[in-house]
Image (tube, rainbow, N blue to C red):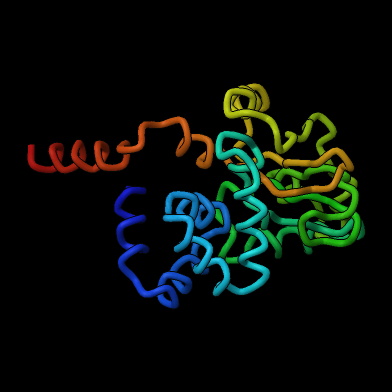
Length: 209
């Protein structure tokens, strides 16, 4: 539970807290840092690796209940000349979650977020059905309209329901990819804070019965 996460991080020395947060995804780390005392949060951010701290600071600049606040700035990003084989290798990386692996995003360089011009998204199911040498950019789903970082939680929820997706791109006014929101990010935000504890209690009760 988030309140217990805060207690644990606050009880650690800042170097150890920094190590723990760097192992988390940037979006999860940002959510946790936002709950810390501002002085402690700044101390931890200053000790984090510059690239990690930059991602977290970017997420903290958005309202937590928007696509910008919910997104992960490290989705699967491919160049326009990437093949199906390249795309499948990218989504197979161990650190990529199943939800994030559902879509690969095609962009112009630079490939780190915010990227160059966003070209579109390709479903992993489509990639699995095509020859390895085919260009992934030729398989873009033109029906996927990106979210903006200012899209609120209600708009994001309706978006996932409308498109029946588990992952969605977030793009700025210059059509640069900023990150991606996954459906589990949305559920974590709209479910009650104690939902994990309630679910575990129910499972324990079922096992006991």
